[in-house]
Image (tube, rainbow, N blue to C red; front, top):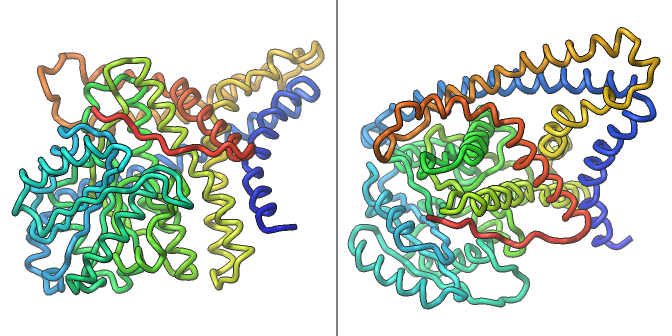
Length: 492
């Protein structure tokens, strides 16, 4: 069998498992409803365990978050003996058709951080497909921020280069090669460069670079580490609708629980890493959609398992997918969740490189990362449907004999009790979402906080429509070979 056929088989596995589970639950409801009822109880018990696990780690993450954002990292950095004064921050800002107001806001936030901005090398990376619009914006912003940063580079990613797909990964790859030429010409030591890859709407916390530099300089193996902050979607959260708000906070809380368990962490969205590691792995991959998390796996494989993610308990804030139209906003939310669910493309990649390529990565490490990704993507696609929809089927199709049994009459009370206990996850999420909200940009409605709490009753609908369904589509598309192209989120 050719290697490509192995790889195609690996791409099919996740969808087979998901569809077997969903179809099997329906079939069992007809053919063996007693077994189905026991399976539902077992799954709901498992889900209660998952919720308890989630709440436990979320509260730990929240405590660390509050502690770390309150520290004056700039003062701590200046008072230390760490070798931070030679550090250059290479900040990549890939963009495609975004309005100048969005990009300007990001640069303004960078220019006002509590860190010497003369250590910032800004790379505004545009696309030839948007040449006229981009170059006009780049020229304006270069003039506005002249003298603020160490330097301000502009790159223009050519269209139709071989062996790549249009998107953020290929744009970053091209920009990375150009920046390497610049760094080599300036004789800047690779060990003194930290790369931060930000979505174009990323607003950094004022202490982000002081914190990042302090952690980087005090980490012994710093060149084999990626650095992951808390991703908030707060820039326009007050203007967003309830479905978007619940989904956005859900993403933030998921990431926060992962930060507490760094052995599970992949990089996600905006993050940082060493320039040396980026060069060693050959920059970002050019033919994938989820380059933000793939770059971690590239490091893990290149360094034979000796690569990790360091949590940063400090936020960077981005836009939600809200636009002027409610319908387009919901479509955008679906597409965003589907793009994130497309991270399932890492599953065949890991299988192929872990077991079909020569490496010395410990077998336990291989199975650990495969299990974390596989189980996470499986639960994402199946759990909401099994709990809120398919779990009702055995009651609808039970025969007369089963309807007279104690199991049939007692199971609804057991499931109701389990779900009631699991509500603690919604309660904790609702409270923490209030504490993470930014100040209201205008006149605040007297019931705005109450609305922010009540919106969480829509969580079951949200995680089905904007969780399970896009995840199932992503895994099904991968199995069918219908690759997902890169979709650029609308920014307003």
